[in-house]
Amino acid sequence: MMDHAAFEERIYEAAIVPDLWPQVLADLGDLSKGVGGVLFSVMKTGSHWTASPSIHDTMTRFVQEEWFRLNSRQAIGFAKGLENEARFITEADLFEGDAYLQDPTYRDFFVPNGLGIHASTIISLPQGDSIILSVERALAEGPMEPDTLERLDRLRPHLARSAMMGARLAFERARTAVETLSLLGLPAVALSDNGQVRVANGMFDAERSLWTTRGDDRLALFDPRAGRLFEAAMQAGSLARGGSSIALQSRDGEERAVMHVVPVRLSARDLFGRTAAIAILTKAAGAQVAPTALLKALFDLTAAESNLAADLAAGLSLEEVAAHTGRGIETLRSHLKRIRQKTGCRRQAELVALMMRLVPPTLAGAAD
Image (cartoon, rainbow, N blue to C red; front, side, top):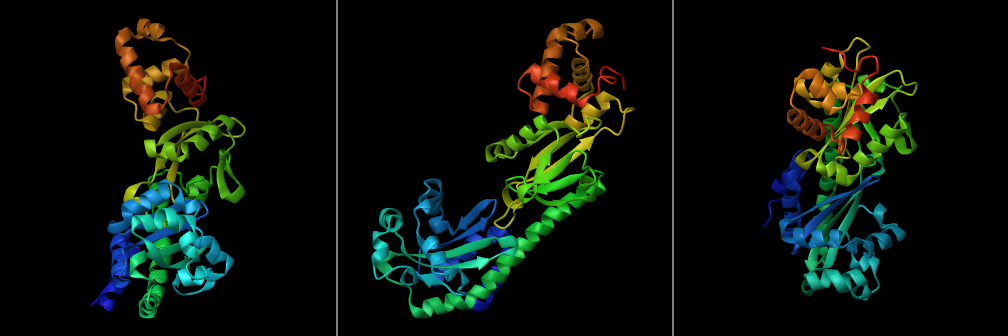
């Protein structure tokens, strides 16, 4: 017999420790005499999900093979207005008789994978987002019993409050991150998957000569080239590979800076966290800033690497730098390779273009 008081405590604990949701879903599955549970967090910028260990692999295939596009549960539920029902719904609410067995997703995915019966509910979250929580049962076990649905419905308010608390805490974590960067003197903004501004610190908000917003509060850069690079950096594949550093300039061309796009990953980005990345601005304080010091700070270059980068920005070739400094050409090539790795530039020409945009011509080649 399940201890409901202890279960409720675990539900609220999952709001603070998102890694506990799979076990909560497993417990819901046990309570429902089911195979397991799954939770989808549906947001304007995309969806995230988790499931109990027993059906995690099955749900991974469900998502990867895009079976959800054929799944009529959600579409029928919304069409019937069931999203407004503060209860768990079943096949009996969605289909006439056993018509669900002819639904392609049931017929070709759920039933062959040992599922086929479910109870689900939709919980509205702040900012218009929602979660869909479902417990899954094998077809052979038959429909959900009234007393099972009654137990699930009693737990629903706790699940809803936990989800809302998790969403709020995720926002607070994002705000804490950007405000902490402000204390370090760094303008920063938390961004969703599509580049939407979630929260920015005051220092970032003050840099309005560099950025603006467009539809849905998405971050946009006045520098066209930097804007294209930023949009590419925010693609899921780019964020998965790591962060990006993008040189940019203000609308009037008088200010230069670098935007570092840092992906938010793993436990830092939980089910209800809309933050995909944090962008940090670093910029020259003025014309008196030596380019080598700026390059070292922005891209974590060594002294030798930043000197070479500044020389390249001044228009010198590797051979000319070798003749001027007395360093061997192979040593310089080794430095150049590391500079490209740190700046994300694949070719020397791309690196030179980036350096020339970042370092004002009057400063290029200047000594520390």
